[in-house]
Length: 477
Ligand code: 4AD
Ligand code: MG
Picture 1 (cartoon, rainbow, N blue to C red):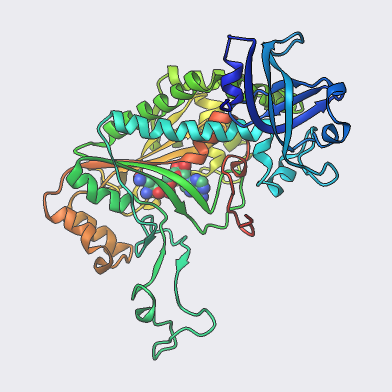
Picture 2 (picture 1 turned 120 degrees about the vertical axis):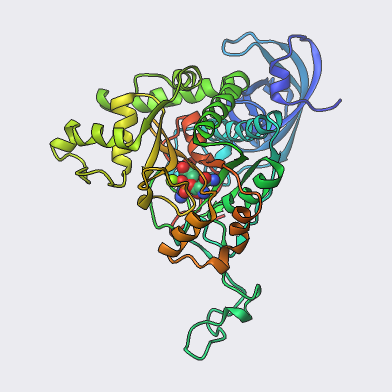
């Protein structure tokens, strides 16, 4: 008899058949009811043991967290809460779990505690649901691009360029930190390093993706990116996964359309395919919000929020319009913001972004045409000479989800910009080549995958939507 998953058994309507199942014990109640979970679904299957027919010593080993193998008859359930259950015929302990030390007891644990036990936290309902959704969303990402003619490109993890020009990079070196080879002036001689130059972990695959867009047309990357920014927030990781499409002959308006269509598509996918997990997480969020004051609770439930995004157009607003709104809004006038917006040109902080999406527009917002000097060097300069064709997509409860732009395709303008920012041409000669040979309008964006998972699961801390979060002072596991 081959073993089935709990998900398969629970969706089965044929009863009265012999089944075999392996999983981990969630609870064992009244020496009779085992709630068994194998990760295939949020639901447990109930296994009923007639304790008189089993060795007492064996039943003592049926503890929370133990791995067991059960065979028995699948029958209609007498109790409420499940349709079928297993009347156990044989019970085998595959792996014991000492109840004195097993951290994941059947009670409410704080997320902080579970983070410290991240290797076991997917044995809880919340984290198994979150990680199944993460997996499903990843699949939806590839499905969307595949169905829309994009080529999946693997951009390098180790690189010599700082795509964002923000200098927040983790250095990659094979040199002995205690005794590196030095130049005559005392600086480290990277010519003797593994790659013969300074290298770092990538902060974005964009620049390399642009090279492939300018030959394969439509490409995307979906891989890990690294930022050594020391921001200890609920929305920043030092290692996160980014989705970056890049498309030749597409302008900023096309880029906005693509981003919006893409996000609606992947969110529709989980609405269709992950109903039970979403329902569980929706209830979890509701319970969590009950502990908050009314004003901080959301107006919509988790599934309603996702449906809202799928069914409504994102609001498209220029930076200039946004600044007008912010300058005249109450929290700005009453000096409630930490950073008061005084004039055009100010960089937007997350408090401003959240005001725009959560209080003013109450929907996802695409902000575009930002001042050139607060954005990266590669963005297409507008005819006004002071704004660039940049876009950020802001989400309620999340803030910035997407950053993208139309790229500067004019060689002379790009060179001038790099010069002004002290970016050496020798470092990006290949990037400039794209503008020398067959240049064309092209655009792309980067979406922080964990922020999407946060939105889709209603989890409030980015550390809880990635298996093993890397943050300042933390790289356990
Ligand atoms: O806005 P960013 O920095 O844009 C880029 O890297 C561009 N090269 C993308 C492109 O045009 N191809 O980052 C893009 C997104 C952000 O909007 C945010 O969602 C996410 O990546 N992100 C982070 N997510 C988690 N932790 C961090 N430290 C993040 N930094 C950026
Ligand atoms: Mg950004």
